[in-house]
Image (cartoon, rainbow, N blue to C red; front, side, top):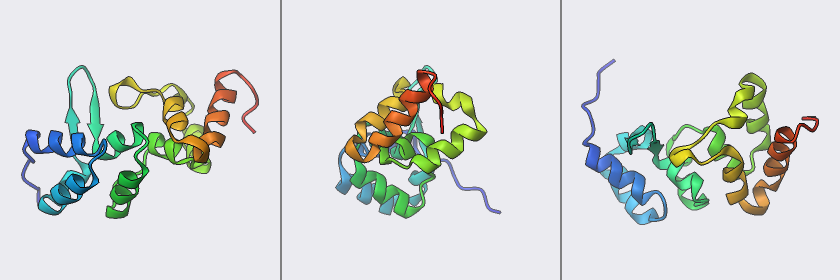
Length: 137
């Protein structure tokens, strides 16, 4: 397996910033450097953010779906925002403490579900029930 050369940090940051809301820029940068798909920006203070994480925490489903379509790796935060209850439940069964995990910028898992709107309301309710100590069935 051949090692890829490191990607310029400024390019990674540009890609991640664009993923908050500029689909055209995301597509353009991805075409220029496909390895950006799995790159993460380090904003300091243990604040790591991928383009997928950026799009997910602002609820930009169009960009999320583009990135997933290119092979971005689904995570619990994106699954919560998209309302993928089966994925969220599966992760929490294996890793129960993930209920307290923080995504980019320290944004909690429940906030990702809330930003997902109506489609993610089942996930938001499920997470709320867990945090309030209700049954998880």
